[in-house]
Length: 332
Image (cartoon, rainbow, N blue to C red; front, side, top):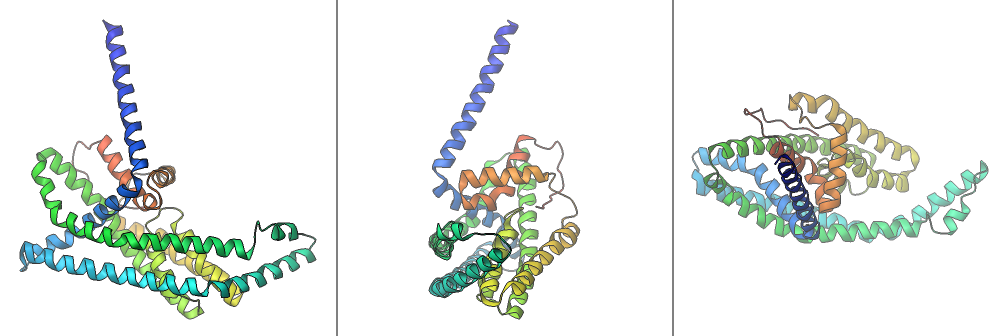
């Protein structure tokens, strides 16, 4: 009898593992469809407190929804237009940067040759060349244009989710409703504080780029804001394009100023400002943050890097449901 129970337990575990594997395989296949839906849900959860606050005022629920929809469309279309114009201008000036990059690589090759380091083979074989780097830049610009084309769909989904999100409570019992409430509060706090810090971080970096005269400062500030939601490596990725442009336009000195300025503002936000706003942590270790970034990025593509922490929060709090309501917290 005991062996039958043990076998039954093993069978149940195998069924659970197989079900999870099938679920992840389906998510991997459906990533192009699933990613914008999850991003829209995350944005809707973030915007929902604003709708509730407006509804509790003099506007009422319907008028609050209408005002929120107008704001979502206005802000969303403004950001899409801003990025689109910046990317278009950047694509037009790529040939100019390609010529400058050739000069930088030739100068670097000469300096290294003077110190006994020969990289002519690497350059001649196009392992590192201006054509290869600019080609990669064109590919990234094409990818960003594809993302912008799907941003309108995300805006529409955000509006629909904001309108329908209050109906979730009607399908949940009291315990599940409380669990959903505390889960969404934690996600809202994480997104809200990360977005606020990212906004001020982007403003500081915008001021730095304007003072230094780096091309497309507004575009890089917007990119900096969005990459602030990518844990661990987002800020490093965000500083690379403006630092490279500063190198091509003004030389190593100003490029190093850009790198130092970005690192300084990011460090100040992460180590000084963020702990004071967060009060408590996510209870997610640095290792789990890195692993979640890798896993969700692999599963859902670029959107998975932004969704990594919120999705990890959902999994963590769904697997180990708290016995008593815990305070909503956020951080990266």
